Image 1 (cartoon, rainbow, N blue to C red):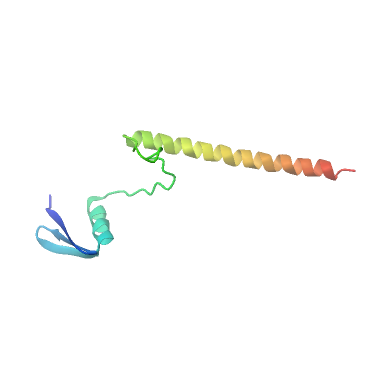
Image 2 (image 1 turned 60 degrees about the vertical axis):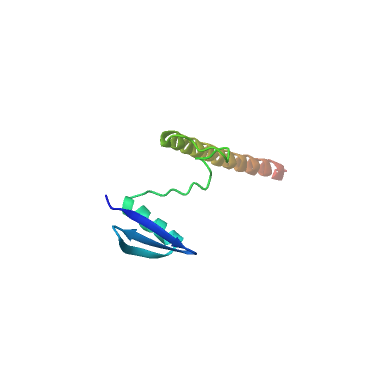
Length: 99
């Protein structure tokens, strides 16, 4: 395996692989380079599923995926309930409009 070093200076990172410069620039560029090199999958968890209480991460990816499935099920149910509510409101308006 290669020896990789990040040398950071102010807002810049220089990435050395086996002693040779392979990337330089803003810190995020070094992170992106390393992620690509190692085949890292980055998932942006906007809903905070992997840290449900905001302080403690879930210990296993299997549990995270189960929580993602549960969240999608809740979102689907909420969408169904909104559609049902709209249908009921439309029915109520039709009843009110009858003379």
